[in-house]
Length: 336
Ligand code: UFG
Image (cartoon, rainbow, N blue to C red; front, side, top):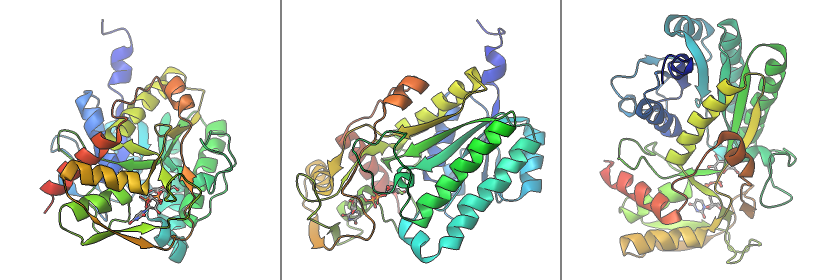
């Protein structure tokens, strides 16, 4: 039955920042597939206009532009914000930290201020496992110490801190989703990881499998892991997008509570296991070059995801490395 109040919440329009980017575009697809209205703001520095469906209102602009964001909030009666926009390359954050404090921390501050001024009630924030730094224990729970080891992680942790203070002072609740290693692509082939100059393992391996790179480097073979290579918790981007929809419902259902939740599957794969999967699925052998460790890489990073599952009623549906790799490969093959 509609008309019982559900309709009003279902119709709440969501402003998606960074909606033309990799993860944001998948969230836009998930919202649209669920029949929920969305508006995208993206400056198209790393995002792509084609990644946003034609029937979703799109504004090219900067989330730090408070006048612009204020106008969008008023014009579209925005009730919630999903904030994906930001810079995401860890090594770049080490050489250009102020870019990260500008694009992530300062831009988020302006966006949150515009949200409060415009009466936005719910805020979903793209946080990261990088806020934990080198974890003391695996799997990582949400109450583990947050001690980032790079400016990227710190820029995101500072935004989490702002949201906690703002939620205590204003009628806005938030959900910080701490992503582990996001990979894969929309199973229907509508979006995927497209940004040039990839640094992420599955993207790089997919490029190599498609002949766009000659080899894949394995950064470090002496980690304290079963095969000596780094272990990560890879999560399918469509499952992550779905978690954002569940987060929105959770925030709307209990508007006085906020949440900080890990998004991963709760189990890890090594670099060698990932490359084995790519080889197996392509029936080829990608050349592997053993290289020294990359600075700042922890041995293993695996989420304890029980809180996200319990709090959000989230059901991961693509918790399978081969599925993630297959979707990443399909997308890579279609890219020019
Ligand atoms: N790796 C390689 N070769 C490569 C690329 C990566 O061996 O060419 C290894 C890394 O050393 C690591 C694993 O593959 O062991 C995964 O590396 P990614 O670069 O794909 O991802 P990270 O774990 O470094 O980074 C991810 C997110 C970041 C986030 C971080 C949290 O992409 O946004 O987790 O620590 F900050």
